[in-house]
Amino acid sequence: MERLPFFIFSFTCLFFISKLSVAVDTISPTQTIRDGQTLVSEGETFELGFFSPGSSTKRYLGIWFKTIGSATVVWVANRNNPLTNSSGALTISGDGNIVLLNELETLIWSSNSSIAVKNPVAQLLDSGNLVLRDGSNVNPESYLWQSFDYPSDTLLPGMKLGVNLRSGKNWYLTSWKSEDDPSPGDYTYKFDDRGLPQIVLRKGSVVKFRSGPWDDGVRFGGSELYKNSFFSPSFVFTDQDVYYSFKNNRGITISKFVVDHKGLLQHMRWNDTLLEWVTIMVLQKDTCDVYGICGAYSTCNISNSPVCKCLNGFTPRSPHDYIAPNWSGGCVPISPRKCGSEEGFRNFTEMKLPDTSSFNRDMGSIECEEACLNNCSCVAYAKTGISGCVFWFGDLLDIRDYGEGGLELYIRIAASELDSNNNGKPVAVIVAVSVVSGMLLCVLIGWYIRRRMKERRKGKWPIHFDSSKSGLLLKFSLTI
Image (cartoon, rainbow, N blue to C red):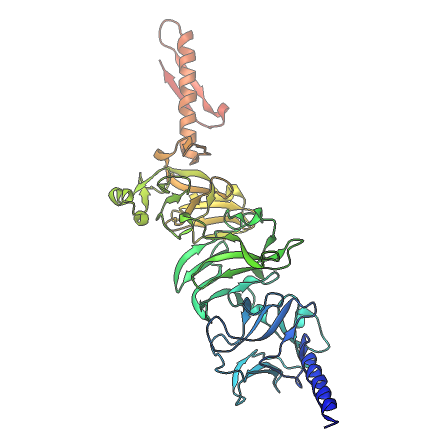
Protein backbone atom coordinates (compact mmCIF):
# COMPACT_ATOMS: atom_id res chain seq x y z
CA MET A 1 0.00 0.00 0.00
CA GLU A 2 2.96 2.28 0.69
CA ARG A 3 3.89 2.11 -2.99
CA LEU A 4 0.41 3.10 -4.19
CA PRO A 5 0.91 6.90 -4.03
CA PHE A 6 4.21 6.53 -5.88
CA PHE A 7 2.49 4.36 -8.50
CA ILE A 8 -0.28 6.89 -8.96
CA PHE A 9 2.25 9.71 -9.21
CA SER A 10 4.31 7.78 -11.77
CA PHE A 11 1.23 6.90 -13.82
CA THR A 12 0.09 10.52 -13.78
CA CYS A 13 3.50 11.72 -14.95
CA LEU A 14 3.59 9.16 -17.71
CA PHE A 15 0.09 10.20 -18.78
CA PHE A 16 1.02 13.85 -19.07
CA ILE A 17 4.31 13.06 -20.78
CA SER A 18 2.34 10.96 -23.26
CA LYS A 19 -0.07 13.84 -23.87
CA LEU A 20 2.78 16.33 -24.24
CA SER A 21 4.59 14.05 -26.67
CA VAL A 22 1.80 14.54 -29.20
CA ALA A 23 0.90 18.12 -28.27
CA VAL A 24 3.42 19.27 -30.89
CA ASP A 25 3.17 20.35 -34.51
CA THR A 26 4.95 17.40 -36.16
CA ILE A 27 4.64 13.60 -36.29
CA SER A 28 6.96 11.01 -37.80
CA PRO A 29 6.27 7.43 -38.96
CA THR A 30 6.78 6.16 -35.41
CA GLN A 31 4.08 8.40 -33.93
CA THR A 32 0.27 8.21 -33.96
CA ILE A 33 -2.46 10.74 -33.20
CA ARG A 34 -5.51 9.02 -31.73
CA ASP A 35 -8.99 10.33 -31.00
CA GLY A 36 -8.66 12.69 -28.03
CA GLN A 37 -5.11 13.74 -28.97
CA THR A 38 -4.20 16.69 -31.19
CA LEU A 39 -1.44 18.35 -33.15
CA VAL A 40 -0.96 22.04 -32.34
CA SER A 41 0.87 24.49 -34.62
CA GLU A 42 4.03 26.06 -33.22
CA GLY A 43 2.39 29.40 -32.43
CA GLU A 44 -0.72 27.63 -31.10
CA THR A 45 -2.88 29.21 -33.80
CA PHE A 46 -4.34 26.02 -35.27
CA GLU A 47 -5.14 22.56 -33.95
CA LEU A 48 -5.68 19.23 -35.70
CA GLY A 49 -7.72 16.42 -34.22
CA PHE A 50 -10.97 14.46 -34.28
CA PHE A 51 -14.41 16.07 -33.99
CA SER A 52 -18.13 15.46 -34.46
CA PRO A 53 -19.99 18.31 -36.23
CA GLY A 54 -23.23 19.66 -34.77
CA SER A 55 -25.50 16.92 -33.53
CA SER A 56 -23.72 14.19 -35.51
CA THR A 57 -22.01 11.28 -33.73
CA LYS A 58 -19.71 10.53 -36.69
CA ARG A 59 -16.04 11.34 -36.28
CA TYR A 60 -13.90 13.35 -38.67
CA LEU A 61 -10.30 14.50 -38.78
CA GLY A 62 -10.16 18.27 -39.08
CA ILE A 63 -8.29 21.51 -38.46
CA TRP A 64 -9.66 24.43 -36.43
CA PHE A 65 -8.58 27.67 -34.78
CA LYS A 66 -7.17 26.56 -31.42
CA THR A 67 -8.46 29.53 -29.42
CA ILE A 68 -11.99 29.03 -30.76
CA GLY A 69 -12.19 25.23 -30.72
CA SER A 70 -13.61 22.56 -32.99
CA ALA A 71 -16.91 24.42 -33.36
CA THR A 72 -15.18 26.28 -36.20
CA VAL A 73 -13.53 23.70 -38.44
CA VAL A 74 -11.70 25.08 -41.48
CA TRP A 75 -10.59 21.83 -43.15
CA VAL A 76 -11.78 18.20 -43.08
CA ALA A 77 -9.74 15.20 -44.26
CA ASN A 78 -12.30 12.40 -44.48
CA ARG A 79 -15.32 14.38 -45.72
CA ASN A 80 -16.65 11.44 -47.73
CA ASN A 81 -15.76 8.66 -45.32
CA PRO A 82 -16.53 9.39 -41.66
CA LEU A 83 -15.51 7.18 -38.76
CA THR A 84 -18.37 5.53 -36.88
CA ASN A 85 -16.60 5.59 -33.51
CA SER A 86 -13.65 7.12 -31.68
CA SER A 87 -11.10 4.52 -32.75
CA GLY A 88 -9.51 6.61 -35.50
CA ALA A 89 -5.73 6.95 -35.71
CA LEU A 90 -3.59 9.34 -37.77
CA THR A 91 -0.06 8.25 -38.70
CA ILE A 92 2.44 8.07 -41.54
CA SER A 93 2.34 4.87 -43.56
CA GLY A 94 5.22 2.78 -44.86
CA ASP A 95 4.96 4.41 -48.29
CA GLY A 96 5.39 7.85 -46.72
CA ASN A 97 1.78 9.11 -46.82
CA ILE A 98 -0.34 10.68 -44.08
CA VAL A 99 -3.08 8.12 -43.44
CA LEU A 100 -6.20 7.85 -41.31
CA LEU A 101 -7.09 4.34 -40.10
CA ASN A 102 -10.03 2.84 -38.17
CA GLU A 103 -9.89 0.21 -35.41
CA LEU A 104 -9.36 -2.55 -38.00
CA GLU A 105 -6.52 -0.52 -39.51
CA THR A 106 -8.62 -0.09 -42.65
CA LEU A 107 -7.62 2.95 -44.69
CA ILE A 108 -10.19 5.74 -44.25
CA TRP A 109 -8.24 8.59 -45.87
CA SER A 110 -4.77 9.21 -47.32
CA SER A 111 -2.71 12.15 -48.58
CA ASN A 112 -2.06 9.93 -51.61
CA SER A 113 1.29 11.47 -52.52
CA SER A 114 3.19 9.66 -55.26
CA ILE A 115 6.58 10.96 -54.11
CA ALA A 116 8.48 8.99 -51.46
CA VAL A 117 11.27 10.27 -49.21
CA LYS A 118 13.43 8.55 -46.60
CA ASN A 119 12.34 10.65 -43.63
CA PRO A 120 8.71 11.81 -44.11
CA VAL A 121 7.04 13.97 -41.46
CA ALA A 122 3.63 15.62 -41.19
CA GLN A 123 3.52 19.15 -39.78
CA LEU A 124 0.70 21.55 -38.91
CA LEU A 125 1.81 25.09 -39.72
CA ASP A 126 0.66 28.33 -38.10
CA SER A 127 -1.08 29.18 -41.39
CA GLY A 128 -3.44 26.22 -40.83
CA ASN A 129 -1.73 24.22 -43.58
CA LEU A 130 -1.06 20.53 -42.89
CA VAL A 131 2.01 19.56 -44.93
CA LEU A 132 3.87 16.35 -45.74
CA ARG A 133 7.58 16.94 -46.27
CA ASP A 134 11.03 15.47 -45.89
CA GLY A 135 12.15 15.87 -42.29
CA SER A 136 15.28 17.76 -43.32
CA ASN A 137 13.67 20.04 -45.91
CA VAL A 138 11.38 22.92 -44.85
CA ASN A 139 11.26 24.61 -48.27
CA PRO A 140 7.55 25.05 -49.24
CA GLU A 141 8.45 24.34 -52.86
CA SER A 142 9.49 20.85 -51.77
CA TYR A 143 6.29 19.85 -49.94
CA LEU A 144 5.15 16.39 -50.99
CA TRP A 145 1.53 17.24 -50.17
CA GLN A 146 -0.37 20.05 -48.43
CA SER A 147 -3.94 20.52 -47.24
CA PHE A 148 -4.03 24.02 -48.80
CA ASP A 149 -4.18 22.26 -52.18
CA TYR A 150 -7.44 20.58 -51.15
CA PRO A 151 -9.71 23.22 -49.57
CA SER A 152 -13.02 22.35 -47.94
CA ASP A 153 -15.52 25.19 -47.52
CA THR A 154 -13.07 27.75 -46.11
CA LEU A 155 -10.39 30.01 -47.58
CA LEU A 156 -7.73 31.10 -45.06
CA PRO A 157 -5.10 33.84 -45.45
CA GLY A 158 -2.43 32.59 -47.85
CA MET A 159 -4.65 29.95 -49.49
CA LYS A 160 -5.27 30.13 -53.23
CA LEU A 161 -8.58 30.18 -55.06
CA GLY A 162 -7.78 29.60 -58.73
CA VAL A 163 -5.94 27.45 -61.25
CA ASN A 164 -2.39 26.40 -62.00
CA LEU A 165 -2.45 26.63 -65.77
CA ARG A 166 0.62 24.43 -66.16
CA SER A 167 -0.45 21.46 -64.02
CA GLY A 168 -4.22 21.97 -64.25
CA LYS A 169 -4.50 22.01 -60.44
CA ASN A 170 -7.73 23.74 -59.40
CA TRP A 171 -8.12 25.27 -55.96
CA TYR A 172 -11.81 25.78 -55.15
CA LEU A 173 -14.28 25.71 -52.27
CA THR A 174 -17.10 23.20 -51.77
CA SER A 175 -19.84 23.77 -49.21
CA TRP A 176 -20.73 21.33 -46.46
CA LYS A 177 -23.90 19.33 -47.07
CA SER A 178 -25.36 20.68 -43.82
CA GLU A 179 -24.23 22.05 -40.48
CA ASP A 180 -24.01 18.47 -39.21
CA ASP A 181 -22.47 16.95 -42.33
CA PRO A 182 -19.13 18.14 -43.79
CA SER A 183 -19.39 15.93 -46.87
CA PRO A 184 -19.37 17.92 -50.16
CA GLY A 185 -22.62 19.85 -50.55
CA ASP A 186 -24.43 21.41 -53.48
CA TYR A 187 -22.33 24.56 -53.89
CA THR A 188 -18.91 25.12 -55.43
CA TYR A 189 -17.03 28.40 -55.74
CA LYS A 190 -14.27 28.12 -58.33
CA PHE A 191 -12.45 30.03 -61.05
CA ASP A 192 -13.83 30.08 -64.56
CA ASP A 193 -10.88 30.65 -66.89
CA ARG A 194 -12.69 30.22 -70.21
CA GLY A 195 -12.26 33.95 -70.85
CA LEU A 196 -11.41 36.84 -68.56
CA PRO A 197 -10.82 35.12 -65.19
CA GLN A 198 -13.69 35.33 -62.70
CA ILE A 199 -14.97 33.26 -59.78
CA VAL A 200 -18.33 31.52 -60.15
CA LEU A 201 -20.72 30.05 -57.57
CA ARG A 202 -22.67 27.06 -58.86
CA LYS A 203 -25.37 24.92 -57.35
CA GLY A 204 -24.66 21.68 -59.12
CA SER A 205 -24.12 22.84 -62.71
CA VAL A 206 -26.34 25.94 -62.44
CA VAL A 207 -24.58 29.31 -62.09
CA LYS A 208 -25.93 31.27 -59.13
CA PHE A 209 -23.42 34.11 -58.81
CA ARG A 210 -20.24 35.31 -60.42
CA SER A 211 -17.71 37.80 -59.20
CA GLY A 212 -17.10 39.48 -62.51
CA PRO A 213 -13.49 40.05 -63.66
CA TRP A 214 -10.74 41.59 -61.56
CA ASP A 215 -10.81 45.39 -61.98
CA ASP A 216 -7.28 46.46 -62.87
CA GLY A 217 -5.66 44.92 -59.84
CA VAL A 218 -8.10 46.38 -57.32
CA ARG A 219 -11.05 44.05 -56.80
CA PHE A 220 -13.49 41.70 -58.46
CA GLY A 221 -16.24 43.24 -60.59
CA GLY A 222 -16.98 46.37 -58.56
CA SER A 223 -17.36 44.49 -55.27
CA GLU A 224 -16.40 46.25 -52.06
CA LEU A 225 -13.40 44.05 -51.27
CA TYR A 226 -11.07 47.02 -51.54
CA LYS A 227 -13.02 49.17 -49.05
CA ASN A 228 -12.61 47.01 -45.96
CA SER A 229 -9.93 47.59 -43.32
CA PHE A 230 -9.72 43.98 -42.12
CA PHE A 231 -7.99 42.16 -44.97
CA SER A 232 -6.16 42.89 -48.22
CA PRO A 233 -7.18 40.96 -51.37
CA SER A 234 -4.74 40.12 -54.15
CA PHE A 235 -4.93 38.60 -57.60
CA VAL A 236 -2.21 36.84 -59.59
CA PHE A 237 -2.60 36.42 -63.35
CA THR A 238 0.40 35.00 -65.20
CA ASP A 239 1.04 32.46 -67.92
CA GLN A 240 1.38 29.85 -65.18
CA ASP A 241 -1.08 30.82 -62.44
CA VAL A 242 -4.34 32.63 -62.01
CA TYR A 243 -5.63 32.86 -58.47
CA TYR A 244 -7.14 35.03 -55.74
CA SER A 245 -5.88 35.16 -52.16
CA PHE A 246 -5.94 37.50 -49.18
CA LYS A 247 -4.00 38.38 -46.07
CA ASN A 248 -5.16 39.82 -42.76
CA ASN A 249 -4.38 43.44 -42.08
CA ARG A 250 -2.43 44.48 -39.01
CA GLY A 251 -4.37 43.90 -35.80
CA ILE A 252 -6.61 41.22 -37.32
CA THR A 253 -5.53 37.75 -36.21
CA ILE A 254 -8.41 35.53 -37.30
CA SER A 255 -10.55 35.83 -40.43
CA LYS A 256 -11.88 33.45 -43.09
CA PHE A 257 -13.86 33.35 -46.33
CA VAL A 258 -16.59 30.70 -46.41
CA VAL A 259 -19.21 29.24 -48.75
CA ASP A 260 -21.84 27.86 -46.37
CA HIS A 261 -24.25 24.98 -46.95
CA LYS A 262 -26.91 27.40 -48.22
CA GLY A 263 -24.57 28.88 -50.83
CA LEU A 264 -23.89 32.14 -48.99
CA LEU A 265 -20.47 33.65 -49.69
CA GLN A 266 -19.13 35.69 -46.79
CA HIS A 267 -15.92 36.92 -45.25
CA MET A 268 -15.88 36.82 -41.46
CA ARG A 269 -13.56 37.79 -38.62
CA TRP A 270 -13.39 36.64 -35.03
CA ASN A 271 -14.28 39.26 -32.42
CA ASP A 272 -12.26 38.57 -29.26
CA THR A 273 -14.49 40.83 -27.19
CA LEU A 274 -17.83 39.39 -28.24
CA LEU A 275 -16.34 35.90 -28.68
CA GLU A 276 -18.24 35.39 -31.92
CA TRP A 277 -17.84 35.54 -35.68
CA VAL A 278 -18.69 38.91 -37.23
CA THR A 279 -19.53 39.17 -40.93
CA ILE A 280 -17.33 41.67 -42.75
CA MET A 281 -18.91 41.19 -46.14
CA VAL A 282 -21.52 39.13 -47.98
CA LEU A 283 -20.90 38.84 -51.72
CA GLN A 284 -24.54 38.26 -52.69
CA LYS A 285 -25.68 41.50 -51.11
CA ASP A 286 -28.77 42.31 -53.21
CA THR A 287 -31.10 41.26 -56.03
CA CYS A 288 -28.67 42.38 -58.74
CA ASP A 289 -26.18 39.73 -57.59
CA VAL A 290 -28.56 36.96 -58.73
CA TYR A 291 -26.99 35.59 -61.88
CA GLY A 292 -28.63 36.75 -65.11
CA ILE A 293 -31.72 38.12 -63.37
CA CYS A 294 -32.33 40.76 -66.05
CA GLY A 295 -31.78 38.57 -69.09
CA ALA A 296 -29.69 39.43 -72.17
CA TYR A 297 -28.72 43.01 -73.13
CA SER A 298 -30.18 44.37 -69.94
CA THR A 299 -28.54 45.97 -66.94
CA CYS A 300 -29.36 45.71 -63.25
CA ASN A 301 -29.09 48.73 -60.96
CA ILE A 302 -30.21 48.23 -57.38
CA SER A 303 -30.91 51.99 -57.05
CA ASN A 304 -33.56 51.87 -59.78
CA SER A 305 -37.17 50.73 -59.62
CA PRO A 306 -37.55 48.35 -61.30
CA VAL A 307 -33.97 47.22 -61.03
CA CYS A 308 -33.78 45.87 -64.60
CA LYS A 309 -33.61 48.06 -67.66
CA CYS A 310 -32.75 47.43 -71.31
CA LEU A 311 -29.44 48.87 -72.39
CA ASN A 312 -29.70 52.07 -74.45
CA GLY A 313 -30.34 50.93 -78.03
CA PHE A 314 -32.24 47.80 -76.98
CA THR A 315 -35.88 46.99 -76.28
CA PRO A 316 -37.64 44.21 -74.30
CA ARG A 317 -37.96 40.97 -76.21
CA SER A 318 -41.43 40.62 -74.69
CA PRO A 319 -42.69 44.03 -73.46
CA HIS A 320 -45.61 42.51 -71.56
CA ASP A 321 -43.43 40.09 -69.61
CA TYR A 322 -40.80 42.74 -68.96
CA ILE A 323 -43.35 44.87 -67.12
CA ALA A 324 -44.70 41.90 -65.13
CA PRO A 325 -41.84 41.91 -63.98
CA ASN A 326 -40.32 38.85 -65.58
CA TRP A 327 -36.99 39.90 -67.00
CA SER A 328 -35.66 36.51 -68.00
CA GLY A 329 -36.53 37.11 -71.68
CA GLY A 330 -34.11 40.04 -71.76
CA CYS A 331 -33.82 42.56 -74.55
CA VAL A 332 -33.04 42.75 -78.28
CA PRO A 333 -31.57 45.50 -80.51
CA ILE A 334 -34.05 48.19 -81.56
CA SER A 335 -32.45 48.25 -85.00
CA PRO A 336 -31.10 44.95 -86.35
CA ARG A 337 -27.34 44.93 -86.73
CA LYS A 338 -25.88 45.07 -90.23
CA CYS A 339 -22.27 44.06 -90.31
CA GLY A 340 -20.31 46.73 -92.15
CA SER A 341 -20.12 50.49 -92.32
CA GLU A 342 -23.52 51.10 -90.66
CA GLU A 343 -22.41 50.02 -87.19
CA GLY A 344 -20.50 51.47 -84.30
CA PHE A 345 -20.02 51.15 -80.54
CA ARG A 346 -21.76 52.73 -77.59
CA ASN A 347 -19.76 53.20 -74.41
CA PHE A 348 -21.31 52.08 -71.10
CA THR A 349 -19.41 53.03 -67.95
CA GLU A 350 -19.23 51.72 -64.37
CA MET A 351 -20.29 48.25 -65.44
CA LYS A 352 -19.85 44.71 -64.21
CA LEU A 353 -18.70 43.17 -67.48
CA PRO A 354 -20.90 40.46 -69.06
CA ASP A 355 -20.32 36.74 -68.65
CA THR A 356 -18.34 34.48 -71.02
CA SER A 357 -15.63 36.45 -72.76
CA SER A 358 -12.43 35.83 -74.65
CA PHE A 359 -9.35 38.01 -74.52
CA ASN A 360 -6.08 38.99 -76.14
CA ARG A 361 -3.44 40.43 -73.82
CA ASP A 362 -1.29 42.00 -76.56
CA MET A 363 -3.63 44.59 -78.08
CA GLY A 364 -4.20 48.29 -77.45
CA SER A 365 -7.60 49.98 -77.10
CA ILE A 366 -7.73 51.16 -80.73
CA GLU A 367 -6.86 47.67 -81.91
CA CYS A 368 -9.64 46.32 -79.67
CA GLU A 369 -12.18 48.45 -81.50
CA GLU A 370 -10.92 47.56 -84.96
CA ALA A 371 -10.68 43.86 -84.19
CA CYS A 372 -14.27 43.73 -82.93
CA LEU A 373 -15.66 45.89 -85.74
CA ASN A 374 -13.99 43.70 -88.36
CA ASN A 375 -15.49 40.53 -86.90
CA CYS A 376 -19.23 40.33 -87.53
CA SER A 377 -19.63 37.86 -84.65
CA CYS A 378 -18.14 40.26 -82.09
CA VAL A 379 -20.92 42.02 -80.15
CA ALA A 380 -18.86 43.94 -77.57
CA TYR A 381 -15.38 44.65 -76.29
CA ALA A 382 -13.65 46.11 -73.27
CA LYS A 383 -10.14 47.14 -72.33
CA THR A 384 -8.71 46.03 -68.99
CA GLY A 385 -5.33 46.56 -67.43
CA ILE A 386 -4.62 42.90 -66.73
CA SER A 387 -5.68 41.30 -69.99
CA GLY A 388 -5.66 43.80 -72.86
CA CYS A 389 -8.62 43.34 -75.19
CA VAL A 390 -11.70 41.45 -74.04
CA PHE A 391 -14.32 40.36 -76.58
CA TRP A 392 -17.83 38.93 -76.46
CA PHE A 393 -19.35 36.81 -79.23
CA GLY A 394 -22.76 35.83 -77.83
CA ASP A 395 -25.66 37.47 -76.02
CA LEU A 396 -24.48 39.79 -73.25
CA LEU A 397 -25.68 38.43 -69.92
CA ASP A 398 -25.43 39.35 -66.25
CA ILE A 399 -24.47 43.02 -66.63
CA ARG A 400 -24.68 45.30 -63.63
CA ASP A 401 -24.57 49.10 -63.44
CA TYR A 402 -22.66 49.85 -60.25
CA GLY A 403 -23.00 53.62 -60.39
CA GLU A 404 -19.49 53.70 -58.93
CA GLY A 405 -16.49 51.60 -59.88
CA GLY A 406 -16.69 48.87 -62.50
CA LEU A 407 -15.31 48.98 -66.04
CA GLU A 408 -16.13 50.46 -69.44
CA LEU A 409 -17.97 48.30 -71.95
CA TYR A 410 -18.33 49.03 -75.69
CA ILE A 411 -21.38 47.38 -77.26
CA ARG A 412 -21.87 47.01 -81.02
CA ILE A 413 -24.98 48.77 -82.23
CA ALA A 414 -26.59 50.01 -85.44
CA ALA A 415 -25.38 53.49 -86.43
CA SER A 416 -28.98 54.71 -86.46
CA GLU A 417 -29.18 54.10 -82.71
CA LEU A 418 -25.99 55.96 -81.85
CA ASP A 419 -26.31 59.33 -80.16
CA SER A 420 -24.39 61.48 -77.72
CA ASN A 421 -26.19 60.37 -74.59
CA ASN A 422 -26.35 57.06 -72.77
CA ASN A 423 -28.63 56.87 -69.75
CA GLY A 424 -27.65 60.38 -68.72
CA LYS A 425 -23.89 59.67 -68.90
CA PRO A 426 -21.31 61.16 -71.32
CA VAL A 427 -20.73 58.71 -74.14
CA ALA A 428 -17.90 58.22 -76.66
CA VAL A 429 -19.59 57.33 -79.98
CA ILE A 430 -17.36 55.50 -82.44
CA VAL A 431 -18.63 54.83 -85.95
CA ALA A 432 -17.11 53.37 -89.07
CA VAL A 433 -14.58 55.62 -90.88
CA SER A 434 -16.56 55.70 -94.11
CA VAL A 435 -19.59 57.23 -92.35
CA VAL A 436 -17.51 60.01 -90.79
CA SER A 437 -15.73 60.75 -94.07
CA GLY A 438 -19.02 61.07 -95.94
CA MET A 439 -20.48 63.48 -93.40
CA LEU A 440 -17.32 65.61 -93.39
CA LEU A 441 -17.31 65.78 -97.17
CA CYS A 442 -20.91 67.02 -97.27
CA VAL A 443 -20.17 69.74 -94.71
CA LEU A 444 -17.12 70.98 -96.62
CA ILE A 445 -18.97 71.08 -99.96
CA GLY A 446 -21.90 72.95 -98.43
CA TRP A 447 -19.63 75.51 -96.82
CA TYR A 448 -17.69 76.05 -100.05
CA ILE A 449 -20.83 76.50 -102.21
CA ARG A 450 -22.40 78.98 -99.78
CA ARG A 451 -19.24 81.04 -99.71
CA ARG A 452 -18.93 81.23 -103.53
CA MET A 453 -22.62 81.96 -104.02
CA LYS A 454 -22.26 85.08 -101.88
CA GLU A 455 -19.45 86.27 -104.16
CA ARG A 456 -20.96 85.18 -107.45
CA ARG A 457 -21.42 87.61 -110.25
CA LYS A 458 -23.88 87.64 -113.05
CA GLY A 459 -23.85 84.68 -115.37
CA LYS A 460 -22.59 81.16 -114.89
CA TRP A 461 -19.03 80.25 -114.00
CA PRO A 462 -17.39 77.04 -112.92
CA ILE A 463 -16.54 76.23 -109.35
CA HIS A 464 -13.62 73.87 -108.96
CA PHE A 465 -13.43 72.06 -105.62
CA ASP A 466 -10.17 70.30 -104.85
CA SER A 467 -10.83 68.16 -101.82
CA SER A 468 -7.27 66.86 -101.83
CA LYS A 469 -6.43 69.96 -99.81
CA SER A 470 -8.68 68.66 -97.09
CA GLY A 471 -7.01 65.25 -97.14
CA LEU A 472 -9.96 63.47 -98.79
CA LEU A 473 -8.19 63.02 -102.16
CA LEU A 474 -11.35 63.67 -104.22
CA LYS A 475 -11.66 66.09 -107.19
CA PHE A 476 -14.79 67.21 -108.95
CA SER A 477 -16.34 70.34 -110.61
CA LEU A 478 -19.68 71.99 -109.99
CA THR A 479 -21.42 74.57 -112.15
CA ILE A 480 -23.88 77.01 -110.60
